[in-house]
Length: 72
Image (cartoon, rainbow, N blue to C red; front, side):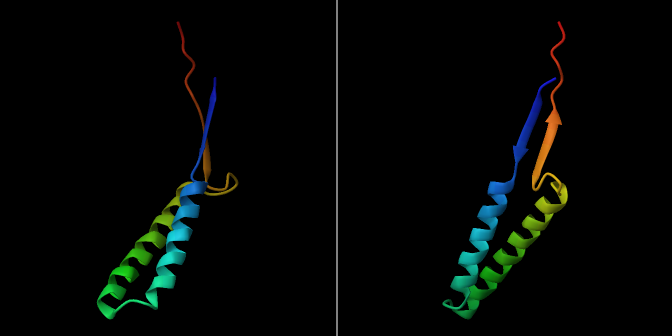
């Protein structure tokens, strides 16, 4: 059987980068746009926590599956 591995580490890094950018912009925008940024930050935090629950350590945001063997 072949082992198939994948990781969501790059996705979590992108989420953190987006959070940093939004936090930096937060100080520079008007009040109406601030609400949109707050909603985006909240959704990014939720997405990060969901990924953390689904792909929890010891694999550190990764999963390993075993593929079915081809029987002839």
